[in-house]
Length: 167
Image (cartoon, rainbow, N blue to C red; front, side, top):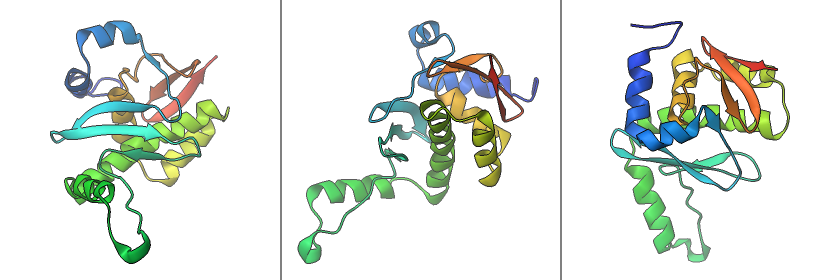
């Protein structure tokens, strides 16, 4: 059953998966996104789902590590671990993770670079992301997007996948 465009069962299930009661109490609909800070988004089909916003823009996540070629084309232990982490996720899991973290990255750009919400909504539309993907990104960050929430000190609400700033 969906209420106001949101599936309350999905919200409760994802929040239960990633948050303790203490987290919910302390969270109070607030998200703080900072560069070079790793956050957990729970799990993706039982596999770790963590991400880090990069200071130069973009992000990395637990299944999306980059491998660099070294002189002599040999991989070091760190590269092998990155390859194993990458290969632990299916193509579909990579797509789901990139979509969810992409939404969070766009939200970070809005709040850290003082962009308008139209910037966020246009990027969501350009990337053909569904309202469900946008909703899940915020749920995984620990907020109920159908209620007012704060990201980096700015107040928002999500209505059918469209972000609106409350002033």
